[in-house]
Amino acid sequence: MRRSSEDTKASILAAARERFAADGYDRTTIRAVAADAAIDPAMVMRYFGNKEKLFAAAADFDLQLPDLADVPRDRIGATLAAHFAERWEADEALMVLLRTGVTNEEVAGRMRAIFAGQLGPLAATLSGDPATAARRAGLVATQILGMALCRYVLRLPPVVEMTREEITAWLGPTLQRYLLGTP
Amino acid sequence: MRRSSEDTKASILAAARERFAADGYDRTTIRAVAADAAIDPAMVMRYFGNKEKLFAAAADFDLQLPDLADVPRDRIGATLAAHFAERWEADEALMVLLRTGVTNEEVAGRMRAIFAGQLGPLAATLSGDPATAARRAGLVATQILGMALCRYVLRLPPVVEMTREEITAWLGPTLQRYLLGTP
DNA sequence: TGGCTATGTCAACAGCTGTTGGCCTACACT
DNA sequence: AGTGTAGGCCAACAGCTGTTGACATAGCCA
Image 1 (cartoon, rainbow over the protein chains, first blue to last red):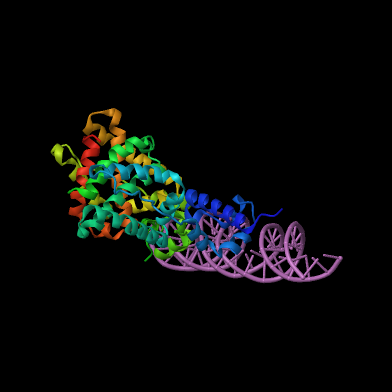
Image 2: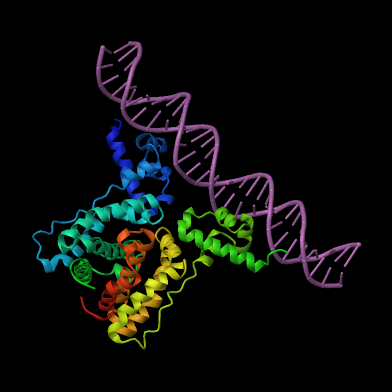
């Protein structure tokens, strides 16, 4: 019984996500992905065309921002912090983006689009001031991505040891001020 | 008139720093560094042994934290924020570390050592509480590195457009709270 | 049963990489 | 002038990479 085309494609994609997340774009080889998926490298090419397209398929990503309409205004920072503390660990997509966006300009562009497109509108809605909304979103991004970088990529011990509750407690007020407060 | 050994070594090192900062470890080739330094690749090997040692020589780094003894206690966050806003642009060493530490475990280890060794003691001195000092230093690192990541590597437009004064104004209170405040 | 197609394998390619050893040459010293 | 040496170049190596095209086989349809 042979695997169906879709099954193979899915297992290649799963292997690719793991490799890209763990090793970044350059160190990830088609041969390694194929070996992980127990398949010939040529299959990867047949199904995804080339390495770039494989990466594009593996790096599909959504911040999955929660609906903040019902959240009390003074709890928004904490809610967001808690959301991201979970979101980072939900799947490997963010790790893929972070590891590759640092050395790959195209991926960096994708991250710009994600944060501008998803965080920007949120900041605009919340602050009510379109002029500063983009900057507020950018500041949130610096703290969110900085935490992800230190905790999951660089693995700074004191940051790794924090619980999700502690992260929420410390970053909540920061995000709150960036979104709704003043310097 | 031939160049002296030291001159050549220095120009190789300068070229290496630029390449590592711009392209990261993997994409930086000995051949490219050699071409930038207008020298044969074999010279790079002769002077630095191998690629890893060349990198080690290029990535020598110091946070150059300012002396905070004379700074009013409530101005410490702002002083630090201002220091880093300048420090990031002073040379390429941080960019080298950031671009490579993300995919190279050894470099990640070096960054852990830098932040634990330089930021840790500072937090311990300031907060006076050794138990939470490491965590406070870690939190500072998340915000500092997150800003560097978004501004210089990912180049998120709203973050790039901020002036150093604006960065100081927004990040100052964050660092102040991480170092001396409570969640 | 015969054949067609989807699924998969194999071997090879051209290019780039880090690295090496042999060779050259300008200069300083005797 | 002769010679040793430091500084530099060249050509080649072995290994890995993305990618390709020819070939094999299992299962479905006529």
